[in-house]
Length: 508
Image (cartoon, rainbow, N blue to C red):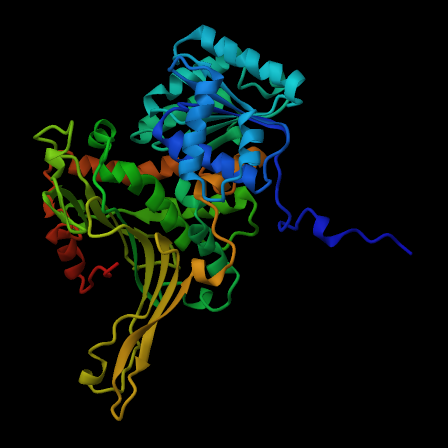
């Protein structure tokens, strides 16, 4: 009898867990907020799910003069506090035995020489054949310094290391097109372009990846996913919190540079892109890039966009200070905490369909969602009073916090009269699936270690996104943001922007 291969072992089958080769994860800024709240818990959860190789080491690099034991204590506290999966002491002990800490500052040549020696030692001691990913959990201003150190020591060199060397860079990637290009050139010179992972944690969320499944695995949506049936698209990212401890960074960037340039334009690209020929990273990115290149900003930015800044108010029953009263914010700051803009996409599929994108701090509640609003039925043989409660059909993709999809459409109200009103069919991840969604950083850290770049924007996408934001920033340069009270859905001018076109923001 001929031998038949196991169908579960084919290269195309992705049901088997992907386990990286033996490798090291080097975290720069390992004592910072991102590392403690996201990266260390994600590493523990991956270990708990059996997705890390036996030969796996975490190397922490930071300025504090700590030893391995102190670092392990910090990591233990972070993992216990942030872990998504149940706590298992045996998993932690096995993982913690592979933690090491290298103290030093980014301009300290000796510290980087020591880091390089430590990575070399791992080949002998832990059987790691030169594979390492460097995670930049550090301020963007420090990127060039660390990149130059990695180049000087040869740590970024695949050939010299005898394995693969990858770098993970957090947003913001530059603060305008010019700085983004300079940073792209530097990081692509130090590492090869294929080894650069620009992380956008929104793309690691299950609901964001579900946009691709929703659109391309079903025949239900694609026929109406165009300008013939879609009236408009609204993308909202609302936060109920203020700026927290990010005053210095936030006041220098503002809402548009902070999240509109990356998270929200990436969501827009996924909603609007054409079907890729495959889910190969290059094919997906090629379609997203076409959308980003086709984005049209408003002809009149003053009427097609709104900037806002929150005043004192009430959020969730608690008093909230205004932006200008936040700690370390200048009393005359004109930085926006709210931004809304009307964008178009210049291609046949989306001709004349407005994409309204908004982001804001200190709003009534935390929600990120994409709403596809469909055109009204062309003929309604009902009395006007019968359909006064009927709105647009809507498909709403909730990214967070209540992950799921809502379909809104009209239905007759039970009774003797023909009254039609909106109802909602609601799918929630937590109820539909027994397996809980992995945290975004879990998925993305694993993707880096296995070398899957599908969910990571490349340099061209980053630069094209700045081509959208830079003209807005230039037009806003000498303007004062519109005020809105903390706990409101943004400035009145934002409602007026849609009202002039006979539309309204969806109540998120």
